[in-house]
Length: 330
Image (cartoon, rainbow, N blue to C red; front, side, top):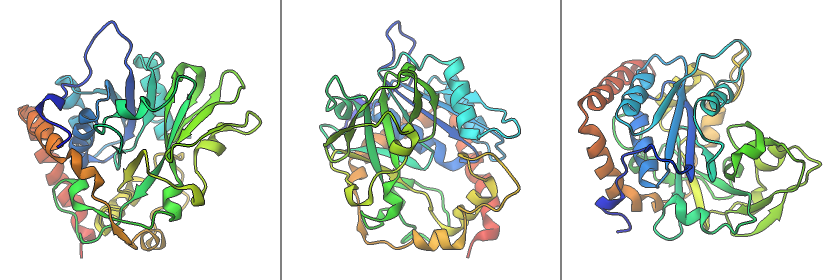
């Protein structure tokens, strides 16, 4: 076992030292899934976890507030203005309110994405230790998981329920998530990477297969760090497990919620369609690598749930979600 009780994290601690590893997210209607996501990334060793939330109807914001009150994370309510991209607006508010620009490394993950490090003891520190001093960005491919064998949503641990993955070279796995060194050098934070470097210079990128390249200053960073090449997909150093479907009924609720990475419009949601679901519902093999965190995450969850307000919020979130998902169940 890689982890033990010493791995348990209280969460963000107020110190004079700048945070080394900061994780930020933007969430809407992720009620029953929030607690596992927070517990998992506390176990991975992030110094700060900061989450913005907007327009929640299922108690996500209340759960985040309870976790923040107990000192495990920081929570930023995000009122989205017309035309704003919810995730980007949330990141901007986080940046204004919290000291993330002094971090050594900054990462953005959604509530359905779980960092999974294959180096050392599996902590984020083991991953960034692999980056030499001149590495600016660590770019990781996702590993996309399918619903099998689950049919309808039920309360439980996402990382334990869904272990069937798509083929490694499936196009769903070209999407990148990054850890970026010294975030103050960038003007904007997008959901996959930091963009608009203040000085137009090449950046050194460490990829998931251990190779290194440099960015082209003549091209926008988002075009270089949003998707990788399908023939270069690798999870050797680390991956982020992406549970972008879960079950059909959960997927339908996601469609009602809308997309966090685009401004809300009346246009058809091209992401949450039957064709999209079917294309990503083709398991090739099992990937159980994230299970080496299981005991530590369970222990972390026990600690979190000792707080009665957090436990009450979890029960309420599961109740609300069960009611909302029921019309879509088979």
